[in-house]
Length: 400
Figure (tube, helix red, strand yellow):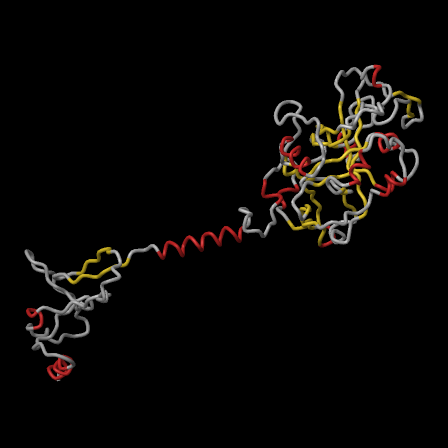
């Protein structure tokens, strides 16, 4: 079936794309205004979409005639189109137009506005139902055929016995518009001056590419093909085997991929709905979010300035400097401060019991003592400054 599709293009854009595929468009609705069709990446039943059809009277192709409604009561398609339209001219060249219509076909004999549930029953029409004579589709299939324009359609893959449904988007691999085979009709309710144009999308068996997703798919006619010309030909106002033969699975190449689950809620609308969920272009993909954060951190590390450590009198400071490629001197990472001569010449403190605490004396006022960065708070033993390891051996000799 086809219960949701995408069409987020203006009528002017659609017109140009069809004309590029050798499909003439002699009339089209305005891009804006009350009669403009809806533009949505999440097109749902009840929305006003774009339909491409031959420019024929409201009763359809062929001469005007009486029909029977669903109750087998004779009724006439009375549409005030003027006496000059009682018969379709045979000498006038066929013109085609784009028209805004509501999705969910309502037959012309309907007296009152149906509820939403009734309308949902006619958003699709099965191809095998058209092969049978009679029925509600009898007059539409012979005289009111159309093309429903879309960018692509959605279908849900059921997993875990139907508990999980993963939406997939289906579009043409060549990026062209999709031309669904459809039927249209026009109705005027009792005590209402307005006419309402509606349409349905014809479905058929899925092709091999989509069989994993669903057993039904829309009938897709190739843009600008002979099949489109035959389907819309107003001179063919009787149903035939040739028309029925057009309703078959699409044999062209399609792109099929999972998309955001947000498309499942009617009313949501976003261009990300037609982008693969794992694509780098999909901003809602959480993997892309973290990937961007990681790249930002790497760039921040590269831009950090180098730090040069300078040796000062009694303390160290750091300053930020730019890298000089011509300077071959290695930057000092850190400098260990040495004890002053005054502290080195002092005698070691007397040996005390274990209860005595080793607290460092407070620095004298008026001057700042230079304390080793590795000092444990006690004064160094009195010893002469000697190079190498002689300082350590001298220390243990004094204690002995």
